[in-house]
Image 1: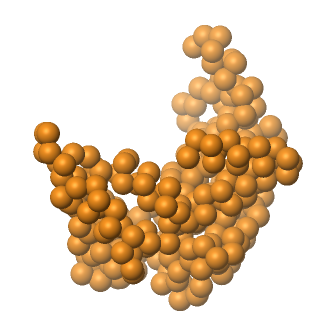
Image 2 (image 1 turned 135 degrees about the horizontal axis):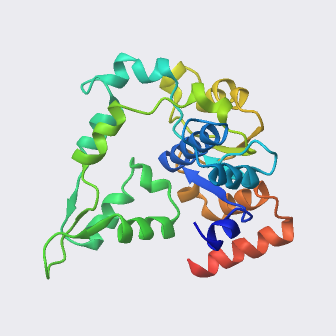
Image 3 (image 1 turned 120 degrees about the vertical axis):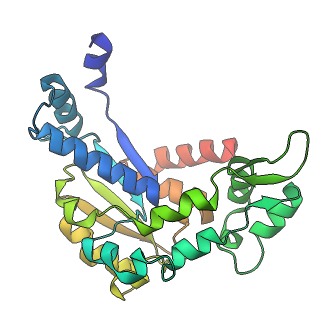
Length: 255
């Protein structure tokens, strides 16, 4: 452990994640906070780094979290028959049935924006980015494309979701949770609308959390409205309006 470790302790670390990315950020924060609170064999200097990042003497990994519709299951939902059984889990079934190969990029793009598919509501730039990053050439020298992550690899995860809700109290940093007003992603969990699920079962369990409902978007809010969501994230991180506008303009230029 050298000078770089000491320098790292004073650098604010912000976690921003969407869907399962948000879940990963939440779990990382909870695990780090648990270690910093004195779990066995925790390195003393590691504890100091995590406490310094949180800035309040308790400490986790992040100074702040911005979670965009994270997948937060409680024990009841994770154990529900419709969740555990492959033949009853809709998310598992639709993932396994997902098309994985296309003859060329044009065919892929037409598939993504076809009526009825979730990608059809995405910003055109997000669709293009997905087409470029989520697929690879299927054959050397050819034009046919296939998914980088096969449905067989992705689908089983949805049968064994991590149980997160009961641990949310362990998050010690401020949390901004963004939810799409049109999202129906978690309606089945408690037979209540997604926004209410986050309100009743997630926000209420966290020490310092605020819920932000973004009008007119669904679960894929950063893909549907990237500039609006970027502005929301900037504000959640404490940027003033001018700084947020500059950050969004810079993002637009890169897109």
